Amino acid sequence: MDASSSREAHVSRHSGFDSRLAARWIRACAEEVSTHRDHLTQLDAAIGDADHGVNMDRGFSAALSGLDAIEGVPPGQVLQQTGATLMFRVGGAAGPLYGSAFRRAGEHLGDDASVGLEELLAALREGLAAMQSLGAAVEGDKTIIDAWLPAIGSLERELRAGADPDVVVRRAREAAEAGATATTAMQARKGRASYLGPRSVGHQDPGATSTALLFRALERAVNDP
Amino acid sequence: MVTSYQRRGTIQSVDRAARILKALGSGTARLGVTELSESVGLAKATVHGLLRTLENQELVEQDPETGKYRLGPAMLQLGNAFLDGHELRARSLLWADSLANRVGESVRVGVLYGRSVLIVHHVFRPDDSVQVLEVGATIPWHACGLGRAAAAFSGSDRRSSLLAGPLPKLTGRTVVEPHELSLALDAVVSTGVAIVDQEAILGECEIAAAALDHRGRTAGAIGVVGPSDRLHPAAPSQELITEVKEAARGLSREMGAARFSALGG
Image (cartoon, rainbow over all chains, first blue to last red; front, side, top):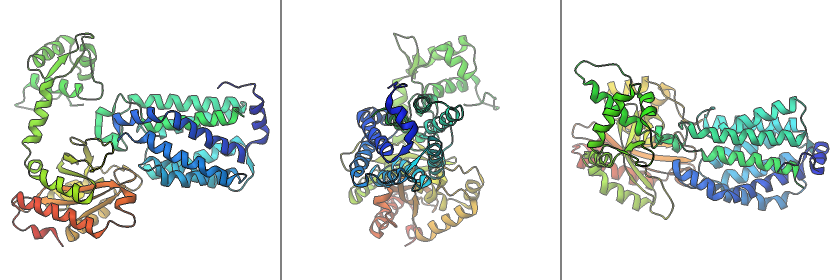
């Protein structure tokens, strides 16, 4: 995964987040979610209704099959289409949450053919706002937010420090993974897991875990051909 | 965590033992004497003595390999005894089963417990999907259909104190404004049903109705819960609402409610 000197990272730096990179990201998301489907479901079985892996896999498979039909459209529209698909195909709470995040992020990017990582960061921040208004979750509630928020924070820091794109996305993935791991010690205050009260402590949140997979996918999309 | 203050007429060692049991019942499955003494704020020797006593009663047990403690088998018997002795639960079993079968959705029965609803019975949606038993779960009353149905028919004092207390926002859609909630409770009284969409959990909708006792007061509530897109495409179907109200009426009758027509429609 460490491809600091890869030619593709170099290409990405110059061409920015365009239609091809957006599609590569969604494809990588679908692969990551599919690979980790059983793990997500296992995590969800401990504190939820044991369907997060299956739901996410169904949603991203649908988003993946929709990619061909929208080849070449601006990256913002790729994300909006993905969001619309996730909204209706994932189900549960994750469907509306991830659906609105991708849709709002896509709307933020508008019809630009290519944007920089700064704009992508702004779009992901909009996606975070969409999820927070829908779910009313804040940091520490043991949700998606606990991985998404540190990833955004890391993106911002690294971009401001002028880091290379491959470093920026690697650090974001690391931050999301650390955030997901940190949910283990938290008591859930949102979602079905909150019904368990203190018994939700000691289990990693499946939503934060799937968010870390999406940032892992972004790292791959930026670095891989 | 339970505070360590002493109420007059209570026994300190029993209070301490209860705190140890609650600590063992929260999240971390196994705790050592040191961890326990830190979490309940007692000396290790005291904790050790309490654990030995609880172990004699099989309320806790010690893992032979790690030496750590966990809840013992007698706890399950106590939990089951609580459920068995619960009148509303006992009387709801058949009604809940039949409702779940008729509408093909998950059914829950709950009672007001402090500022929450305690789920005392849960019948799974009759399909092959994996579901989690929610018996024992507590859900803030205002965000959940069972809670609103039960609160609507509780006495005016109880209702005021429920509306006055903290009303956390569980999703972006949770109604937390007391006046708005009060109007929602009035609507429950006039329609006989509480319809709550995605206010406790995103993507989940509940249709619930109160079960009343012989005084016409809330004994609890019974309701259907399931995916919003199925139960609440634009609004729940009239058939679904009728089924829930019928089940609640039947349950109220069994609880001794004389004028179950007070439940509306």
